[in-house]
Image (cartoon, rainbow, N blue to C red; front, side):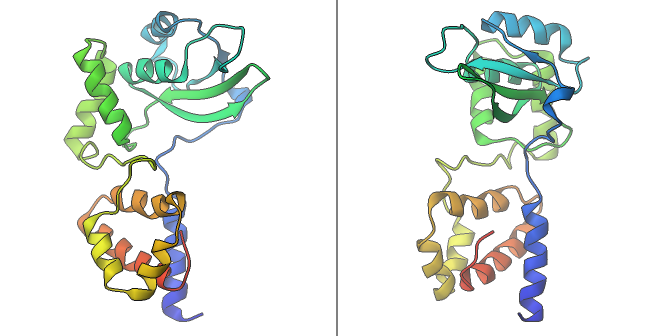
Length: 215
């Protein structure tokens, strides 16, 4: 392995450790709660959104469960209104799974999905001061504009595509990747904070792809 390739591998290892997902604590350190309705979860967050700094595991009924509960989408909408965000999901039992919800960490990235969601929540008059404060902070420091796409609707950025077109080996390997593998590259480009960082990542990714490797 050449010195350049080793250097690129080290930089990409650092990139792989960077993720917008919340830090996950062991299940036993968090309370687990089930809310039958959206209003019940709203009531909980209205009282606890600022005092519960570690979050909770939300017990959510599976599709055919006989136990009623709030759905994941309903829970996420409610959480966004109070400045909280979803995290890791785990299996629980035959009828339920658990989803972690926590206060949004300072400086955490926004997904385009959630940017779209809060627009609907604001229009519906559901957004609360705590949730609006997180939106304002993201707009102030540029995170709002850097919201990343989901894997289902992510497209190849023009600057990255141009770089791929300029390297035959990288371009051919890229064409053979599935959507999940491609998203690994696209998400890292979308979350680059500075243009210089983005340019460097494009160079690194093209070099990596040319050798038949992925992030």
